[in-house]
Image (cartoon, rainbow, N blue to C red; front, side, top):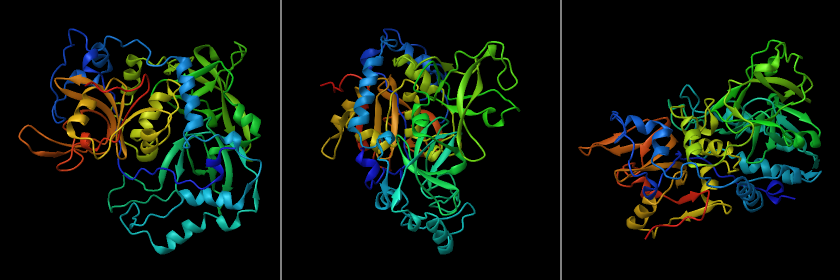
Length: 480
């Protein structure tokens, strides 16, 4: 049994903002660097060409060499499942959980913040509202023995700290970061259901990477074998675009224009008769895929849907090469920052997770867990690491390396004129411009910036705050 599912756990919380980086080593540059294009205003040092994956790939002499092959990725994922306590094996749950175990799981997540909270009108959250939200946890009604149920998520759905869709904020008027927003699950994600809220509208679930509250209408319950067996047999389609959508269909509204996120894998019904329509449409121009739906009684059914060939998908996970890693990262360029996958978007660690998911690589959900995972090759930094050591490590960062500061992750693109460039999903950002003026930028989305000028405070650089550099390939080595 996975003890992390049965015992109390304090999941890493995202109380600071995070970034996502992609860096290319100076030693890997081609002899003739491509034209950077016209300089662009505002972001320090930015040029037009830096906003394209082709520019960064052209600077590499190994752009098409796999960082890890499929066998190595499978081995990496196996290490992640066995060594990292943030990855949960819901199949290993016992047939019965005690009330204390369920209560501990809920209590580990649903902790009311110690600072004042405000609603979306800037008004303080009242004691009465807090009491009603906490009462909806329903922990007093947990039975002495709880048999986990299993289900598949049928549409993109938020994971919440508490069983409520009430949005709460730390600062009046600043409504971007909902403090009750944890993450999101996507169609086909499997969950173990261990508790229901007092009003019956919310389920407390364990998923592979997170435990939280989810809207009950987003989950269809089925037998364990069906739920855990969904999508385990090919053929498949892997979503390789930022998102893909099924075809519109009035015949089956539950599967009409359903949004599928990067890295989602859906089974293909390869033996579907060529002349038989799918939800009113002949399927020659699409893939007939099987997707979960929720029946009126909440039970799971698997139904065919059409995934148009125009959508950005592949028959298998992509090869993990620098060129394709760059390509996948830039598919999110300009997307609005979404704390905890809010705004139908994603935050920095979600951005990283979904990029690597399209290659079949499993990562923990949050920045702290990713940075410190025992299953990943990581170069840690501490208070004793001086500026020279940190600068040398950044200069040695390679394409796809992940650079972490507290609450934030960046993906390395490469090095140009002594600067290390990254792509990241970031809410803020600041630097000093050419005349020393401190620029407070509200980037608020997936952006390309240099790392060296980025400031974590008036005096500290991001580089001074780096906690880890993670590399998904051969062990990390720093140049002397």
